[in-house]
Picture 1 (cartoon, helix red, strand yellow):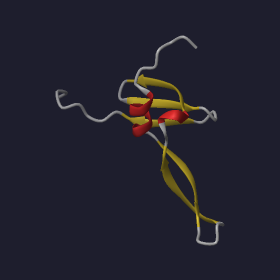
Picture 2 (picture 1 turned 90 degrees about the vertical axis):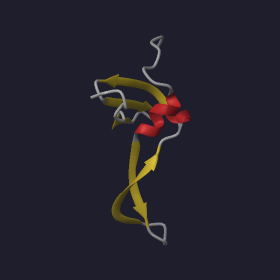
Picture 3 (picture 1 turned 30 degrees about the vertical axis):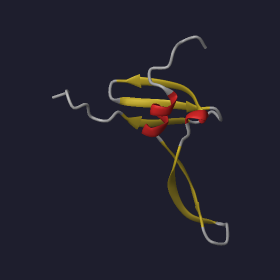
Picture 4 (picture 1 turned 60 degrees about the vertical axis):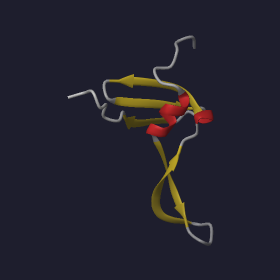
Length: 74
């Protein structure tokens, strides 16, 4: 893969979240889901299409997020 990423890995990681099962005090799943942050080390590839950011992680998951609104955009 020789294509440079559209965003630096650290910046892209801040824009997406991974949904994982919530664990109770006993360590068992509660049936609810919670968002967990993604680290820059987990980012394998990044693509920006319009206002959407797509991150592929090193474990093969594809996560999506939105670019923040730019101050100079109207």
